Amino acid sequence: MLTPLEIHKKEFRRAFRGYSEEEVDAFLDRVVQDYERLYRENQELQERLQKTEGSIAQYRELEEVIKNTLVMAQKNAQELEANAAREAELIVREARTQAETILRDAQSRAERLVREAEEQARNTLRATEERARELTAAAEARVQAILEEYRHLETQARVFRARFESFLEAQLKLLREGGPGGFPEVEKGPPPAGEAREKAGPSPDVNGRHAP
Image (tube, rainbow, N blue to C red; front, side, top):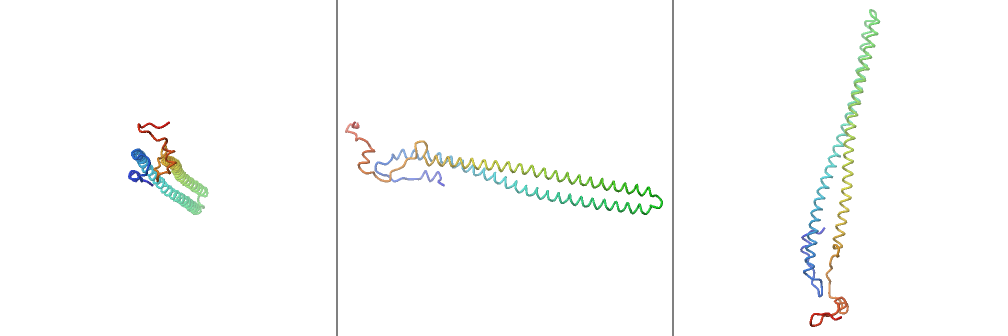
């Protein structure tokens, strides 16, 4: 990619009946100024694009962390549920053992103890399941929010990249065309005598007037 300094230092061969050196230099100065401004804008846009891509990479890393957290939360919830089930089973077994021990003296009391133990086990299991559902829902909601923000940033990055590419293509097209008047071309060599006279028009007389 050309730099403003390369355009500024560009020299053209002098040729007979070529373009005016002053006009070419003046036009090149304008091209250098415009190109330097576009060059700086291009650098700024690239820096912004790199920052945006860096943010997207960070959100992707955060998404991976959240996914791992969700997996761990689900695993913990399953472990809690399994522990609660084992605890409930243990409570029921202990209650039944105790009930069988005092069955001879208080059958009704044993049955009541079993019912209370089973109810306690169900309550413990329900509480654990509810807690597990809350943890899972909270983790899923957090993951969803991060995914939505990541998709939003990714959409903005695509729109920004598309606009940036369109902007560069438009500016490069303007530079190739040389603006509204076109970029001047310096002749590589003198044209044939007849062609030169046709392009130059009628020769002026001694007073500086052109023949009709």
